[in-house]
Each structure stands twice: as structure tokens, then as C-alpha cells.
Length: 287
Image 1 (cartoon, rainbow, N blue to C red):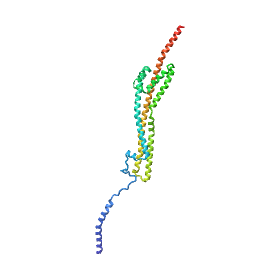
Image 2 (cartoon, helix red, strand yellow):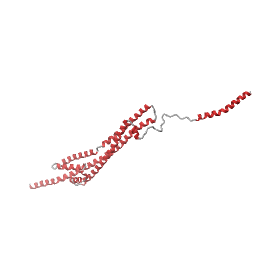
Image 3 (cartoon, helix red, strand yellow):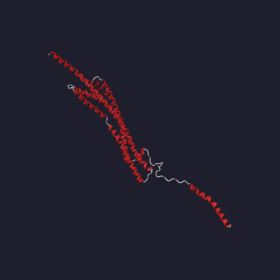
Image 4 (cartoon, rainbow, N blue to C red):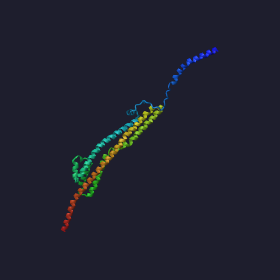
């Protein structure tokens, strides 16, 4: 009995001595945090590519580069046409308004011709209208007034049409750029996204660092297409309204020229009619 009690006491002492050490060794392992498993859809904070516009252009596919360069040249052409047409249209409108005021102040076609050709309005469509009226009057001295008016109306309409076509030059380029630039940019975007998907298939990964640069380069083409198209459409609409106003001024000037010619013809025919009536009355009295 004493031997059994002695062995139980030794076992209890052994357990009491070794249990705290085992607990201390097991605690750090139990309390160590387990890192979470990386998600395949996690967005990396540091992309290996430079996503600035210039870097995306340099890293883009050759076809996407060609699309972007073409759209940049189209945008440059848009602003070049805008600057040139603003200068040309502003000068033409000022000259036409000044010449129209001179036509309205003049008493006859000869006075209007002298006033218009004496100053800076001597060059321009309105001056051509007046010169055409003077030439037709000189050529048709012995012809009927109705024929003179009809032939002059045809000549004036041709001058108006020619001046309108001249002023509308290069505006068709703006319409073309505004209509086609978004689709050209879309083509570059589709091509770039297709290359991005091909890269995903070859790398066998869905990591955003692989997908993002190609998609960003593709979307850059669409952005530049819109940058080229939107100003072109706006500028084209502005020029269309301004050219319509310019043509209206030329139409008013043609009307003034025809009115002066009609009055001059009536003044010329009135003395002739008076002399003919006097001669007929004299012959009747003599008889």
C-alpha cells in the first residue's frame, strides 16, 4: 500500500511539473494568426505598367498607334480649318455688309459702282455683282429692259453660287471628321481589347495587372476619337450658320443691284417715250 501511494505521489508531481511547460509551448502556435488566402480577383495596388497617356501610346499595338496618330492629325486639321475660315469669313462678312450699305445709300447704279470701287470694298462678290450689272447694261443698250433684267438675274445668281461655294470650301472636311472619327477610335478600341484578351489567354491569368494596360491603351483611341469629333461637329454647325448668313447678304446685294438697274432703265426710257409722244403729237397736229 505504501508503495502504491508513493508511486501515485511521484506521478502527480511529474504531471504538475511538466503540464505548465507543455501549455506554454502550445499557446504561441495556437495564437499565431493565419494569413488569408489570396483572392484571384484581388486588385494589386502597384501595377507594373505606367498608365500615363504617352506611356500607353508607346506601349500600344502598331494598329492602335496608327489610329491614334490619324485621329491626332484629324484634330489638327479641324483647328487649322477653324482658324483659316474664321479669318476668311470675318473679312468677307465685313466687306459684304459695308458694300451693301453703300448700295442702299446710292441713288443709281453708277454712283454705287463708284463708291464700292473707291475703297477697300472694291474686291469681293458684291463688287462683282455691281460690275456684272454695269457690263450687262453696256452690252444691252439697244435691247429691251425685260431682257436685260432677265440676263442680269442669271449672272447675279451665278456669282452668288460661286461665292457661296468658295466660302464653303474645307467645311466638308469638318463634317467628315465629325462623322467618322468616333468609329475610327472605336476600331482602335476593339483591336486593343482583342489583343488584351489574347494576352490573358496566353498568360493564363485573370490578374488585373495583365488586363488593365491593354484595355487602357484601347480606350485611349476612343477618347482621342471623341476629342477629334466633338469640336469638328460644333465648328461645322457654326460655319454652316455663318455661311448661310453670308449668302443672305449676297442675296440682298443682288436685290439692290436689280432695283438700281430697274430704276436706271426706267429713267433712260422715260425721256425716249416723252420724245416719241411729242413727235407723234407734232405729226398729228401737222396733219
